[in-house]
Image (tube, rainbow, N blue to C red; front, side, top):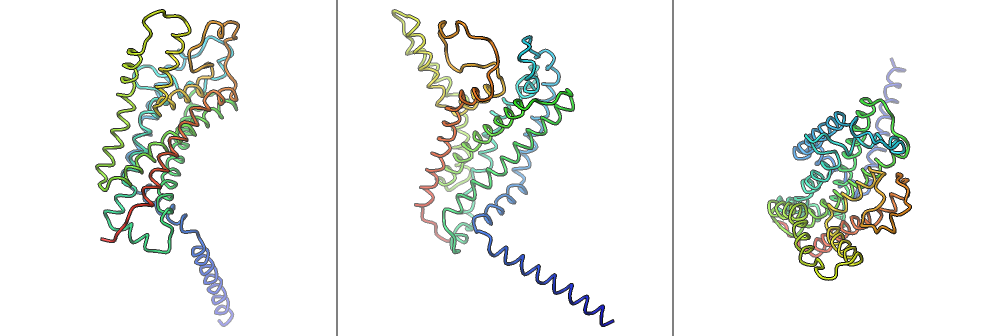
Length: 342
């Protein structure tokens, strides 16, 4: 009996020591990552994120189904392009539903706006922001953790959906992707994350600027509608007004088309569309107008992955720069604001 009691006391002592070690590890954890874990848990357990996730999954499965129905008609006649058949799962459609990249370009901004429009002002209205900042904690930890947590959730979500499409496509067509196709899809998912990160930072910026979540949400959606609908209309009006009417030659027409294209690329959605189309369609060899001298002698073959990355590098730089500008503005505004307890 005494031996059993000694054994029980030894086990209890080891459990107490392990629990104390776990508490010490928790105490030594950086406050920034504690806030990140809390924000990730809030996003995952919220109805808003679950509704957006369900919407993205339904559109993903719907676009994959339409791609399956029309993938036979989308098989290219060129033998050199038949090796990129797996990429057709993301780009082709039978006309009933848009392709997967179209859905991402349309619903991605809504995902970023939905996760960031009340990141700061809801905490301020509840009175929890002043309580958090009353702790021995750097103020910028709060804003940085909000962005990092939402970006982690978006990244996991996009990679899960992307691998879901790959897995279902592999089961449906029975052809595994080549290494180049796989890396092109990975780059496409990274581009989608950068694109949604821009709208996330824009929503966080309006959340810092406006005190009411409804106002920040309406402002973010207004910017999204402007770039999605009205921006191209304005560029068309500018293109019509600046079109050269006298002594039109090839040089002036080419310069005018380049000018219009530069204006269109001020829109983040245009940058994302051109970059993703280049990555998922290897036959795209140029993103601008070409002269006959440039076309003459060119071999109609797909571009390798490295050349496609060089072609879209300005677009990636533009998306990252716009994201950093929005984050910098929200950072400066948040650090200068006076936060009082209610």
